[in-house]
Image (cartoon, rainbow, N blue to C red; front, side, top):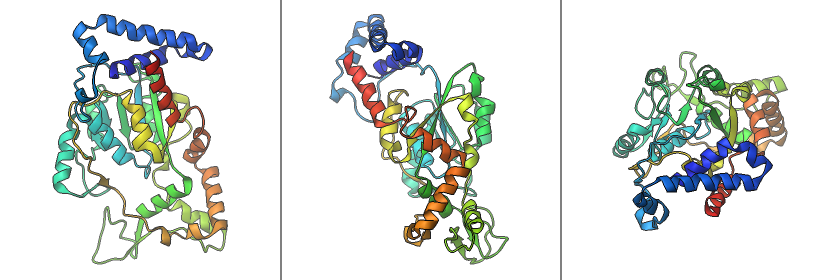
Amino acid sequence: MLCIQRCLLYANYYSAGCRRQNKTVWLSISTAIVTLYFLLSSPTEFGNNFFQTKDAAAPTISNSNSNNHPPILYGHVHVAKTGGTPLNGILANKFDHVCGHKGYSYDAYQDNERAKQEGVVTLGVGVGWSRSRVNPEIMNTIGYENCDYISVEQPADYWMDHFAYEKFHNMKMELHIPCRDRLEHLMSMCNYQEVCTETTCLTTRGRVMKGDLLFQKTKIACNAKTDEELFASVRKCFLYLERYNHALMEGFDVKCFDFKNQFTTYIDYMSGILSHRRFESEPYIHRETNDPRNKEEECIWYNPVVKEKVDKFLLENVQYYQFCDKCMGSENEIAKYMVVKFVKLQHAI
């Protein structure tokens, strides 16, 4: 099945112009490529791929010996507080050639097995580096030459400097960006940001703690007397929003996906592109990066006027939210219908 998916992927990439003009031509190209693959395969390989039964394909083991790579690179723009840590970890545990700040394929199995023994695994500033949180300097030292899917937590300039305009070994890269409801995302960032009663104390995850200082979550000033005061409190919650800017649209093909569907639809989509690992450690152990939210303490949900003002402020002032507003629901959204369409094309051949 992976061989068929790969063939379709190559056909999709190299015959995009034909497909737009004539669906029959596209299907013919796809059929020819898949047929060529089977003709070049040995009889045994043909039988194993075409007549494979459900019992022969266990969910955690893949017998594929294919070293093929997709025709382009894929990049995951890890926008803070959009579920990127478990997404990176799960993809590295399921597929080969995933390289990310929150996990690499080559040692994901053993990393997850260790996490099972440790129980709750907490990641964050001040916790230190590990195989579940790889030092970015080490990532740069390793390089990305053996990667099909790259996930980093860096400003947008990092993507531009290393991968834009096919500068990385003349390889085209497609960026995938998670999109989350603006206000929910804001409140998740507020929940991560913490303040305390002393100026020398910064965060419980990080850096300086003295005695029993009282930490509090950053909150929106719903009772602010002016809009400037309200918006200033909103900005205090912002967390690494510079990981996206509109310059990425010039250097890459950029697609979006729904934060709520990333562990279902999005993983299904990538499973047709990336090679499955031979062994998968299950279940995946969640790495904690934030405390549970208490939505009852979030005043924004009880004040419709503040809610509307803040939502408008976010859309008008944050490029990431502007991108998501235009991308979601467009042809550039990696949505369920794309996965269904891909599967139907496979069955049509």
